Image (cartoon, rainbow, N blue to C red; front, side):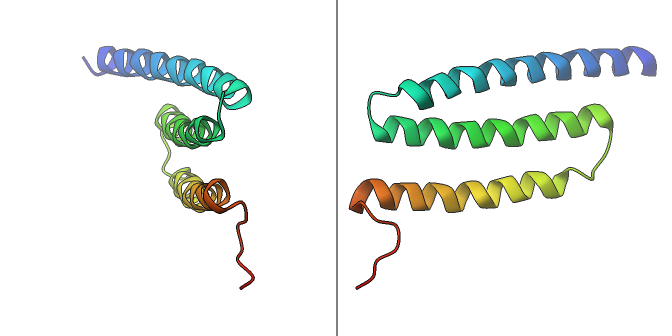
Length: 98
């Protein structure tokens, strides 16, 4: 019974990895071609979220908790990058020198 559950869990996890990889490719195309800068910003944000999901899925496949710190690091860097990009799109500069 446990072997069947492990095989099903492995199969579902691999399907999720493949779907996330396809999503990453499509988002990369949107980030490059995007008609406007806000579209590119949203695509880059979604790429970061998908990278977090991919690392989490790889952690599930490897049956380890050592990749949790990497997921948190990607999340923190993604938040800082999103804030900087939004400020750049709004004002044209990231650091105000006033």
